[in-house]
Each structure stands twice: as C-alpha cells, then as structure tokens.
Length: 111
Length: 115
Image (cartoon, chains in turn blue, yellow):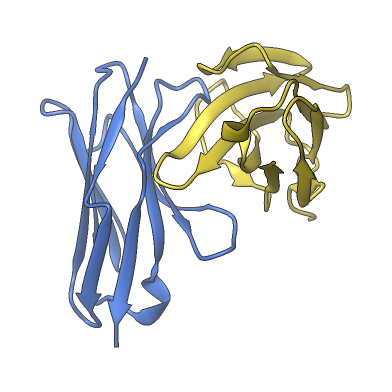
C-alpha cells in the first residue's frame, strides 16, 4: 500500500519567516495530494490540495509543489503568522477516497 | 449546513469490552470514512463507505468493523478492546464526483480510552 513520510516532525519559525514541510510517497499511481491543518483540539481541515497533472498551486500565503518523478511534494507557508501554529498533515491517494497520511508536522510560530 | 457529527465525544472502556461509535455526515454526502489518530502516527485509514457499501479497507484487524445506513449515517465497532485501541477516531464525509477524491470534511472525533 501507499506509504507517506513527512518531515520535519516539528518546526519552529519566527513570525514573518517562511515554513516548508516535505513529504514523500511510495505509490507512483497516487494522483491526489491534499494538506490538512489541525489546530489544537480541533478537527483537521483542508487547506490546499494538488493533483498529479499540476506541478504547483498557490493560495495566498500557501503554496504546494509536486515532483512526480521524485515522488515528493512540499507545503510552503510564507509570512507566517501566529494563527499558522498547528499540526499539518500531508496525504496521498490513488483517487479512491483512501488517503494515506503522513505523521504530521507541528508548526510553532514565535512572536 | 450542519457539519459532521460524531457521538459520543468521549468514552472510557476496559480491555475486552466492545464499543460502537456513530457518525452523521453532512447532508447530501454519501461517502463516509473513518480514521484512527494517535500521537506520532498521524491518521490511519480504517475504512470508507459509499451508499451502504464498504469500498475500501485499511490494515486493521477484523475487530474493527463498520457499516453505513441508507441515510448515510455510519457506525464503527471495535470488539475485544485492547489498550492500544486508545485513540481519537475521526469520521469524515465527502461528496464524491465520479469517484474523484476530493475534500474530506472531518468531525470532531470520538476519543476512546481503554483501561
């Protein structure tokens, strides 16, 4: 089955700096790569996703890049703010609603 | 529109007991998935139901089972509970179009503690 590895497990950044989280996947048939944000004590929520026919996608301060050849994808958050502090999960799917999630990255934005 | 509702929110059981968790999806959503969340392990896929049929199953033992009703509500059951079953169980609903994976809408979860 699909295996998704996520790094780093924790990330501390100064407010205003950028944060980058990287994930690798094993199944070359995977074609959908979402990112979920989970604030403390709350439910995970989708923040951005990308499909395999696209190499990059941006939504305001958040961007995701995908390298199908290397089987890795990354989340970039620019101009970080305190409200960006949360756990971020990457995931991969072959398109059948069975998502394989990474172990998560705890992001702390220092004021 | 009401979100995904899970009940109960918290429960404590002892080893060997069984538990049933319930999930009501967003109105109109016919896909319901279940995930187990534990510290350091992320979210582990349990199973996914669509129109009362289990379409996908994760790598969990047969003690974990589920079902979906005609109104799309879903239940999952864990029998013969073990200490390692302590976790947050998340339900997510989706409105798939042509089986293309899209956004999952998660509930707040049911936190199970096994003593």
